[in-house]
Image (tube, rainbow over all chains, first blue to last red; front, side, top):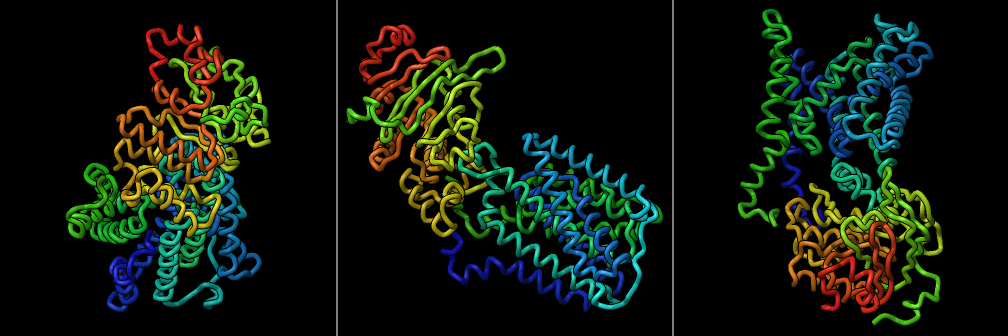
Length: 333
Length: 251
């Protein structure tokens, strides 16, 4: 399919992505400290949204339990670091493995009994809230006070004096995640994910073992989300339940992804890149007079997107692109 | 023409369903039905609406667990297996109401169907071959949701073929097609049979069933009421009673 494309067309196809990457690489050189922080947060959400999109978009399973995975990553690496002195660079794989195991268990539990979509969403919310309550009350995990990370001040311990280093680390995460999705999209697993999303009965009838692939999608997505948790913990040097195990961050992830375009490669990139800075600016400008206004704006945007471009920004863009590139679209039969 | 040794059922059948019961609440949708299909045969399954044809398909293909009875395919027991295992064992099916993947292209759909047997590169080749075979060669990059109904029906058959099955259960693939399209599909089924694929098909169009089938099995109210060559079945008084008013000999 794609292999038939001449290289020149391939380059043109990837040009917007490459330009975006170039912009991301040079952006911090033109920015002040506060804006770098906003960009770091934006890229963290890009990474989170791309990770969520593998389950929520590609496979079509509306998981609201991703705070569990974020917490699993953050808490595992932090505890290993505090108590055993293990570098978070190593701890992040432990956190990722635990998150992947939790994710696979949730998928297995929900789908072996063929729960319908809505029930799956509710089960994952319930588990996320249980996780939040558990973390908030277990003393070893710092309870609601949280855990403060000791500063060892070296790159080996995932600690950097300059925000620039954190910026490039999360940029690398985000780029790797996008490349993974692009590869996944055309791979056997990705094709299977999409058949499950589109029509599970038909997927079963062509020999797609849907339970196994739903578990795989959850494992990949949970692992990545845990890595985001480790990054965020190292960046803040502080882990506490509200930020890492609360539902707010999951709702933001889903909102950004839906606005950008669920199930597409670039939707979960565009959504947070536009909305996180917007939210931060609103918070900075109006935080004193109208706190929480950014949430209101998010809500309005979500309604507007669902009403006027149900496929998200990406669907709207590709429609424009289709009009421009192929006036006599070959897609219609 | 049916080979006599196949129609006679002397050899071990490819598919054997024995004493199948499927019960939905108080209703016995399939009641003690037994059925053999020999390798290379085309067997038609007919009966009025609600006779249990689709339910029997569901039971054989693993989408519904039979309450009683056994199903053998290719020498192995398959009742109790799920649809995925049964498909992978070489028994594919189509759906009465087309089940496409709206956001996948024709090529992607057929590739996905071929992928459990072969690697990606090979699966893409299989997909292209099958697309041409079912008349979708020019529409490989069209999204399934943009296909016309006849094309979706063709894709339904294509999906089954791409899994490289030994046998296909066809559930009313010709309903809603124009006569010329029906002729095309019938020719396709015959050519696939010549390549060694066995068929069990449910079809409402009596002329189609009577023309294409080596043998016909008739269900009524969940029970098997007749079985035999098309012309024998058409002369069966019980069958005539069920299809009162339809001229079965027209074919």
